[in-house]
Length: 288
Image (cartoon, rainbow, N blue to C red; front, side, top):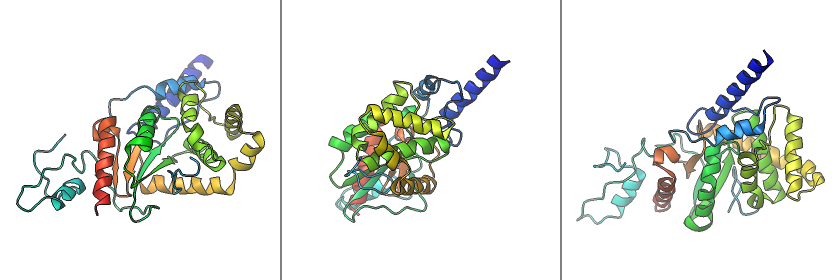
């Protein structure tokens, strides 16, 4: 009976983690059950599904650094931008991105924290999500070498439940310590490669796991303790929770361009297409 109960618990947790990633509702994502190895969860998290920093970084409001044969009745932002810059004597080039298919218009549009001449691009993510782990190196390369100078990139940890909150607290602790740029990728590797989920059902155990991990990265326990539940971290968590609701996030990774347009790997057609779409939407916004 104990073996059956354990197997059922593991199955439920596994299903919950899958539900919290990709393009599924995230409300069910859970930390490993008591006695369950983090590897059991992490291994499922990286299984592909059919559909789909410190000073200078922007996170939750902090500064960081299918083609269509014809235009739809209402021009998409990309098509409109093309049309606006095409001489009257020529026929506008049909837009290659379709609103409602490759991306969606966010209603109502959300305010950004960028300057008037900047365009904000936000990735909503979860450290426990295998899709986010897979996309992260691509996004990092784009952030450092591929994005336009007028783009302000932000990361916002999703806030669905206690497990995602635990990982979000780790993210903002690193931000407050000035170590996010240095250790962001290390957190992903610890979870998905080293099978240390860095969260548990017991909050005290979660804190212990995260303190021990950061200690191996050179962060003193005293610095961790005074930062982990600091006012700044609590405020950023509150902001991330608000953005999760306002952006209507039901799956991660999830991209928001200038508070107006949302997309992901699946709807855009793949990781390369996602970057192109992000660039095109940002360029469209910058021309306005």
